[in-house]
Amino acid sequence: MSQLFSPLKVKDVTFRNRIGVAPMCQYSSNDGVATNWHMVHLGSRAVGGAGLIIAEATAVMPNGRITPGCAGIWSDAHTEALIPIVQFQAEHGAVPGIQLAHAGRKGSAARPWDGGAHLSNEDGGYDIIGPFDEPFDSDGVRLWKQPRMMTQDDIDEVQDAFVAAAKRSLDAGYKLVEVHGAHGYLLHSFFSPLVNKRSDKYGGSLENRARMMLETVEKVRAVWPENLPLAVRLSVTDWDEDGLTVEDNIQMAKWLKERGVDFVDCSAGGASQSSRSSIGNRTAEQIGFAGQIRDAADVMTMAVGTITEAHQAERVIASGQAEIALLARQMLRDPYWPFHAAKALGVETKPVMSVQNGFFVG
Ligand SMILES: Cc1cc2nc3c(=O)[nH]c(=O)nc-3n(C[C@H](O)[C@H](O)[C@H](O)COP(=O)(O)O)c2cc1C
Image (cartoon, rainbow, N blue to C red; front, side, top):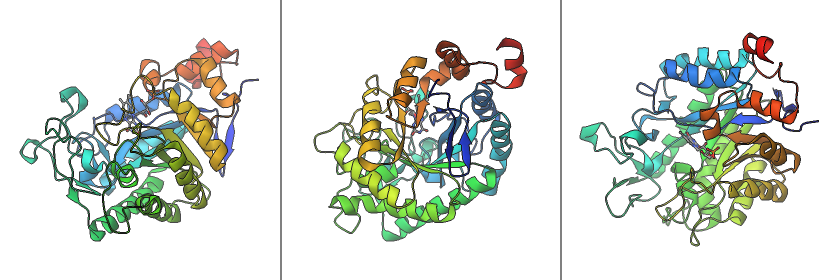
């Protein structure tokens, strides 16, 4: 009996299996509004059999986008464009999820295939904000833009934007919200001592650096229905001896759980130039960290990082490292990965894909 293909019920939401599509920026939105690309990208992975699909980092306000092509959810036009996509995913059996994000000092960048460096405002970029006023790259080459150090008013504005975005996510039909607290973007950058050098109540001690993330999540939880799951993605290590450790993140996971968070999605890295990327080749180490967080904080986890093979994903679930195995790049190679995984694990394949496909090729 495959654990990977066993359903999971969390509150009022049932995941048909433990396979999730990790959030992946598509850089294909118009002023943050979803396009046909999103229907195909997300829709095909629902047809392919994923239990959960977390839509890409979706900015809660315009300057929260990583690039001008990134997704947003700050107006009714954004919500309306998402509704048919969400409906399609749900019709084909996937739980539709969305990652709500603010890019902080890493915003205003070019798309990766255009080099990924910061864009000046003349070239389509925008002013950026962060917990402190140091740019990401001190050598002035890539992410060179100087963020404005956020005031209390800025903090309130961003938290209100997360709340409004959570309400819009509900209106759009999403069943799971994930708050992006990883990869050096705004909430993680407040938590990480590599970035946050403030001396007010949002800086200094672990408790103070955690405050921005915890207040934001608390406010989101207050408007996100109690019967729907809430996740937070963390960078569970900064991969830097001066940065956040797994122990720091076990504490964060406990605080998040106390505030009604159901899942901690365990990623890593991205805070600073010295910190390893979150899409490197050694992301497999993150899987072990998910198990550590799950045991020590007694919280459900999602594991992510170089999961490519069916038996590997099966082990992640069966060994108790996580409730859900998330795949990113492998899902780009193969939107029908769940179908192929079922075959490899000897699970009945017909019900895995949508009937239009599964009836003929199960
Ligand atoms: C094209 C692409 C876009 C990504 N965009 C996001 C994102 O929007 N939010 C996020 O938290 N992680 C993002 N990631 C990271 C993935 O969610 C995942 O954590 C990482 O790729 C490791 O998983 P993998 O080894 O299965 O690819 C992205 C990765 C890729 C390849």
